[in-house]
Amino acid sequence: MSCRIEHVCIKVADLEKSLKFYSQVLGLKEIERKDIPQEDLTVVYLSDGRCEFEIKLEYRQKNEKYSIGTGFCHFTLAVEDLLGSYNIHRKMGYEVSSVGETTEEEAEGYFVKDPNGYKVQIIRGL
Image 1 (cartoon, helix red, strand yellow):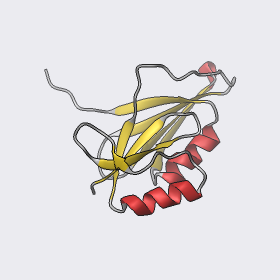
Image 2: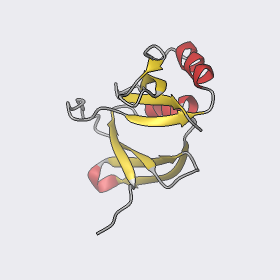
Image 3: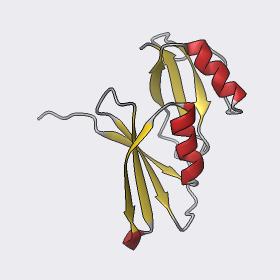
Image 4: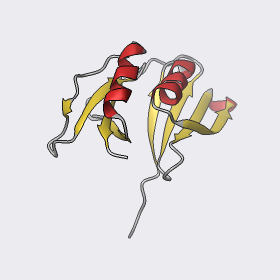
């Protein structure tokens, strides 16, 4: 058996705030949107345009409250200018950790929280 990584799904409480974060803060592009009226659901797929991996934002119009589970930790994005990205995210008012070693592999980076409280790890590495 073989497989490939397809996407990660994130349930969001405010689709517009989440889209702003993932597009303006992280530079991802919306590549597909599906409205599923019978389920009161909108899903938006985002990509960096370089690989096939996608982030799927799932939004229920009935403002269903989500709580972040204890099993999800974070996902990681690589950037060329780590300190430049860090300064931009801080200036935009997002909660960021200090820059330093962020994993057991001693990758240099930091974490930024999205509007839903999910952590995104930003590391040097393009």
